[in-house]
Image (tube, rainbow, N blue to C red; front, side, top):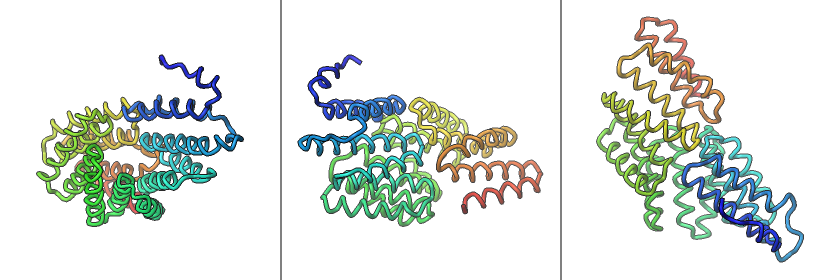
Length: 337
């Protein structure tokens, strides 16, 4: 709005137009407006046209910008929780001619992240390949991003010691290149492990610190994520009213930016908070209502397992041991799958 791209197009510079459109898309992604970001990126692809430039002078610039657009699109799809779409776009980028080493590393970095959410062992392979390229390029920020993703993969595999090691190394790399917002990601991730381990005070300090940085940077997805994690921590420590308020705010934040996977995760945590507070009937009803969303969303197997567990514990507390046993077996089966 308010920007005239016609003059650039008339000047015969579609790469410049596409670059501007991509940058506008990245701004929208950074502010959490994912649907608008995708529209700008799509316009960027249209500006380049279907075929690569035939003029040798412009072919390299065209190929580079095409890769940047496809990878930016993949990144937004990841933020939306559309992991299969993210993976498809990454492979499309890897198939492009004249792909630079940095773009290859970027594609594999995103693949590592998306595969981790899907529980696919390809995550570690892609992450290690990306790490090798970033090391060769001397790219500390890229290295930090991949180490974060490898930590996430280890976390979902249940190897918390390995995850902690990756995240501490990632945090050090971010600190070395001044990426304060990114360093808060490692702080938040460490808090998640401390929360899972019952180290409540350490977890709380991590989440509060991450929230402070992300609020200052107006990094909306991070703000909502820190609130979701603080909400779950409050539920685990018996502060159920605080948990409900934090999780409701997190859900609102995720919905506002179209982060459906993270919104669903916060809703599952809200249902669990109801169970822990003793509101068994409401907890089971709310958990049951979330199954269709979990089954329709890429990489939501972990959340499905959690929902079955909530239903199973609620049934057990209600005295229905047969239904409880069935639900808990379903939770185990889904987690193992």
